[in-house]
Length: 159
Image (cartoon, rainbow, N blue to C red):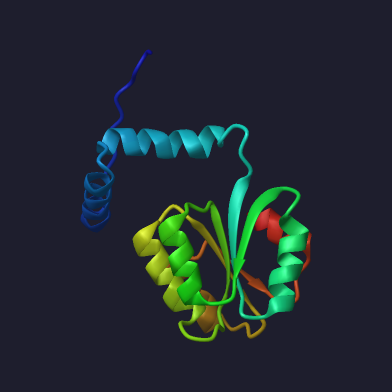
């Protein structure tokens, strides 16, 4: 294999998290970053993207699951605590999470998910939009922010 060197600068906090994650998983930083780049550029052949839906409303979980099940591997849970348990057990490509949940809020869960698995693309959904909430969501690590009700096409464009 013909290899090339690249040099990147990352914030110390991110470097520290990367170093701990690689030590925990028993792989080198080079192996981890190569896998990340490969997965993001080439996708994962023969594998659908996995999506975790987090919403305390059953009808919303069921609707999103029905919309996405043909193109994605979908898992749906009703609480932030269950979402965090799932994320610890399984790797997801995308998380669609409601802001208002029973127990931990969607923003609290988002912050914890970004600590555990920062590569998960997170989309915040809400029926109670505000500029303040959108800013907080983006600062917490959300890739996007979607206001209910929304169409399947709107969601898929963000995924």
